[in-house]
Image (cartoon, rainbow, N blue to C red; front, side, top):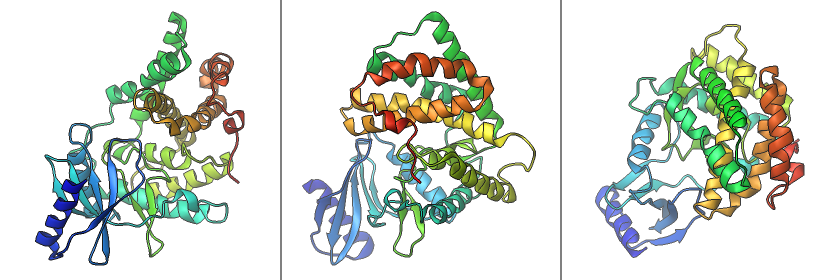
Length: 343
């Protein structure tokens, strides 16, 4: 990546008066086509990114970074951006992701920090910001990944006409519930792998280029029903109520008597049904096998939410008696992950 290193050198020389040739060291990647490097020069480090512009939302990343920074939310600073080549130079937030720090002893404090940051995003970024709408079309398109990629391509399961009608009815129900919520800034992937612990023990958020204006409970679902770590239901509800209290005090949610727990679980179903499709696609289309190990946990979230509310009884029976046995034949399936929680 000599071209990227030369560009980083030129950016720092022009914008920060830093001279000298730096060294690029690869960092771990994510589910995208982005490649990350630490760029060290003159005793300091930054993060260099190569994000192919034909595949990645670089312009959106820069736009949302500006919105969040203006709202006072800690995010990496954009030190340089070459749109044509897909090069970005960012401030270095360190290496501490939130996920490894989520022990039973630390979880409450960390989630309360994250809740404060989440509410700051929802309050600080105006709902009329120039971001895509998380509308009915987009919500349906996401859930359509489930029958195509998870059922059809991964499990080899073909839906009958009656099953497709049942699933479409469930999707309509979930979309209608999502659109009843206040529409606010939504990070869209606000979980413990996209939150960093800074040197002063505060939190920062990353990977926000997919942000939209959408349902207020979407980010709480991403955080409390994390696809990479699962907590007991009582702890999840405790953090949910902490969020509800703060968001109502801040004017994000109305302080009324609607069933926010049902709205939260319905939003979780939308997200986790989508994620089953996305993780299957990451493996089958992009060759990213790591996410197969999280599929059972995500399926467990779906089964739990369906079981909690009588209005989902038909879908719960179908998932439990038809789809679960199909999934159990797969090499990636781990029965313990259906219900296993961190305590």
